Length: 376
Image 1: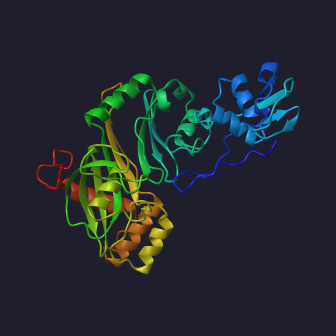
Image 2: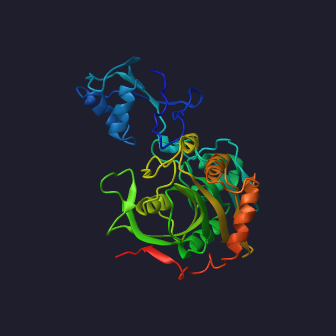
Image 3: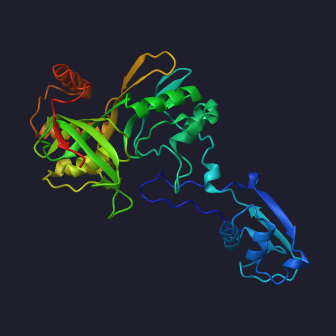
């Protein structure tokens, strides 16, 4: 039997991880070919002997050497004469291995009997999917909190892109999950992001469009004229530099890649965004190096607020910028000649918070700001 190979992923997923069962848990099935199947190809006969598996899956096992006839590996077209001993090493489907616990370091910043709030690092996929069945946040949550095996999707109610860092809330009970999902549907969960955008963003305002699959590139989402889903992002510029802007984005809806798509459509894609970025503005060597070190979109889920499912208390959390985004901001601030006495991100946040307090309607309906895009 050939060695199990590693699952090959593209750049959108985690590092390669094995997805087949190890030999200690390997199970086998054995058959003796009945005379009525004599003359059939091995793949056709096996489909009749093991109807619980799809023919394509059985054929793949034969090709990969997981099926033997009288102890020998043979091709799918091998003709049977009847009476042969067939053995198949049952290979678990990748998706069957998705919901298994895998210990990993998780930055849990709050936890009680109903919910937990964590700060997801960049590079971690949230939920198993094709090409990435293990090593996800879901796997880590199942190991950290075994009770989550009783909650659909291990309590996950919203997602962050693999290369977006920041805050997520996870439900620990079905009741809490139902409550949080209803809040998301009612748009009462507040999700605020910090990001670095290409160019000098000239506006504070609301971007309102339809978002759907990009008709020219099916791996991306895009602003579309019809057939998409309503998407609303509120944008506020925190700092402007020579060729970049530090922005805050509050989601009203939660579409796939929403902030990244909206900022690209506005002509200001996020710095470092390999999928949606198309830098149109000059950047110094130092800034380019900082973006290269970032190796991801400069996007962080900075603030999260929701109503506690059990206590009905308004819960609000903040997660400081990770070091990679802060390094990029430091380079931009230095080149912009900004206050050299401010040495830490905490000090910058205090200054920004003080300025934001002067404009305290950020969480209200933003009727006083420009609408950048409006759905037709």
